[in-house]
Structure formats: C-alpha cells, structure tokens
Amino acid sequence: MSRTRTAQQRDAHELARTPVADPYRGALADPYLPSSVVGTSPPAADEPAPVAPGPTPRGTPASATLAGILGIALGLTLGLFGLLLLTIVSLQNDYGAPDRSFYRGTDSGYVVLGLVDFLLAGCCGIGGIVLLTGRLSGRIALTTGGWATILLAAFWLVDGSVRVLVPIVLAIAAATMLFFAYQRAVTDWLGVLPPPQPE
Image: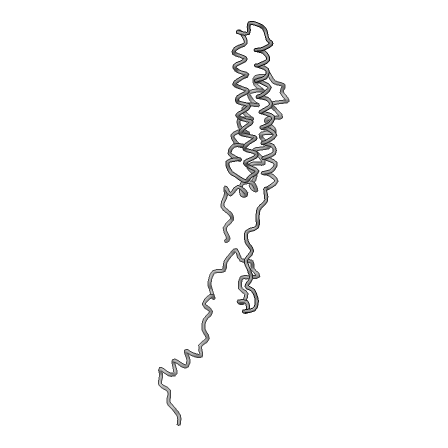
C-alpha cells in the first residue's frame, strides 16, 4: 500500500537530508595561534589536543645591561669624587693654616659639591641596579642622574678648576648611558609601549 506524503512530511524529509552547516565557518581565527593549529580538523579522541605555545620569557636586552653597568660605574666614580672633596675640606681644616676664615666660602662650596656628587652617585648607581631588574623607576633615576651629570660636567668645564679630561669623560659616559637606556628594545622590555597588535 502506497502512502501519499503530505507537504509537511516532504519538507521534513528534505530538511533531514540537508547537511548541517559548520557553526565555526566564517568565525574570526585567533591571531595568536600558530598557522599549523588554525584551520585544522579537530583531533581524534585518542590524540591529544594541540597546545598553543605560551609567552616566551624575555631576557634582559644588551642595551639595558650596558646602561645599568654604565650607571653603576658612573655612580661609583661620582661617589669617589664626593668623598675626595669632603676629605680635602676635612684635611684643610685639620692641618691647614691657623686662620682659614678667608677660605670658608671655598670650603662650603666643596662641601655642597661633595653632597651633590653623593646624590648623583645614588641616582646613577641605584638606578642602574634597579634597571637591571626590569623596573621603569630605574630608567627614571638614570635619566635624572645622567642629565644632572652632564650639567655638572659643563659647570666643571666653565669653572676651569678641574682638568678638562675629567668632565669630558663624565659627560660622554652619561650620554652613552642615556643612549643605551632609551633604545627601543629597552622600552619594549620595560613595558612602556603596548605590544604590536595584529592587523
């Protein structure tokens, strides 16, 4: 006996034979997955699913290392200068002429300059150490100490009481330290700029 199909049954039969559309077709792919993972068929039940690689650890850039080492060396040098200035003032007071009232202004200038040297030594030395740990505050301290050292070297050049070679070497060391501290690799390493976004 033949059964006649109604229109609803025919539509249901055609709908059942229609293949199901891929729900992931046309979806945006993850830009951070490797190309070998994107667009592949799902793994079988006995195969392990591919794992996307995690973020690779970033080492300290060479520019940051050089800037940190220069900052520490510059800090030690400036600290030595400050110690020498205070030692000179102390020795002159102890073993100088009995009446040193005429030199009191010079002595106070040496004391102030020695304290400034200690302050710059702290900025450069501590800033270099902190920069090597990957913190932005280290670069800020190096920037402050570097520009102040350049200004101090210019003062020594104008004053003329120090040999010309000393302020020139200090200014070159401070400028080189600032140059390495502001390289693009150091900026990316410190996280100052956002990572490049996929197109």
